[in-house]
Image (cartoon, rainbow, N blue to C red; front, side, top):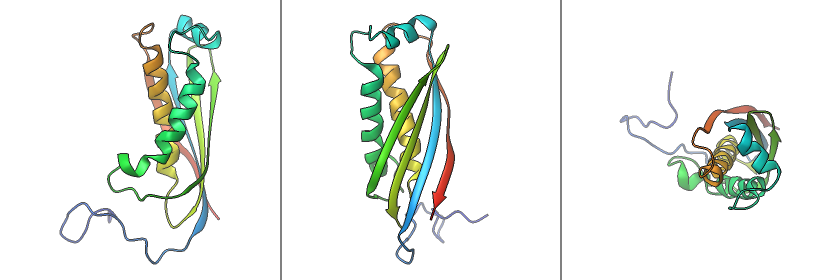
Length: 147
């Protein structure tokens, strides 16, 4: 198996996308953050001192997606057309999903994954004073479409 981010000397290397065509790309990523029941009630009732948890996490996730190439060393900087982030509050967790869209030579799956990750980390940060047992897990790329 040949790794595309390793050059012929075995060194880390950014992939050359010069010869690739611009294509419409979409990616969907998901993840979960597990919280105790009381924390979920506080989120639902806007009862946390730091403010509206999910609105803040949505903005943080969008910002995170826009900064992906700064966070992931060999990731290309791409222009993002759209990032959508959604939350579903369940009994013991919040499910997070992101959909990222671009027209580019490469990318968008890392931006979708970063959006979910940063949204989850923001929820964690906003709830850490009341919940010491949160778990962020199951972050994954669900779908990538090129057309």
